[in-house]
Structures are given as structure tokens and as C-alpha cells.
Image 1 (cartoon, rainbow, N blue to C red):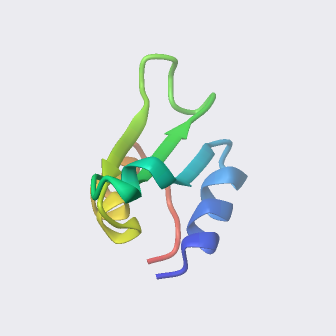
Image 2 (tube, rainbow, N blue to C red):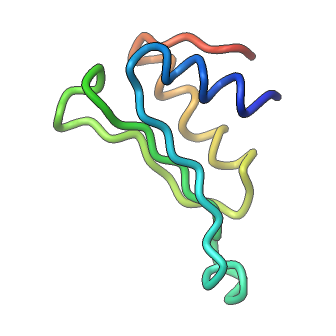
Length: 75
């Protein structure tokens, strides 16, 4: 899965995407990865977000939700 291509495709549709690794949570063996998608195409009350143990887990949660909202991106 090409994460950069996914992020670029969403950005081209007006979605702001953040993928973050948190050093403190990683050291604590928590869920260090955060994925957040927001922006004008996602009404003000919609924020697609999750914290997870891996990038893949973040994408598994958030990408289906973004597809449900009508966004397209590479598989």
C-alpha cells in the first residue's frame, strides 16, 4: 500500500491528512500512530481519526470510512 499516494489523492480532493508517530506513546508501548483526515470536504462536524499500534491499523480503520464518505484513492 502506497501511503504517500493515498495522502496525495486525498489532498487533491481537499482533505488535509496527518499521519503522526508519537515518541512518548511508542516508548510507553501504547498506540503511537495517529491518522487524522479533516478539511472543507468533510463538514465541520466530521473528523476521521484513530490512534493505533501501526500505520496499517490506522489505515484499516480510516480508509473505509473515507470511502464511505465518497473519497477515492489508490488501493
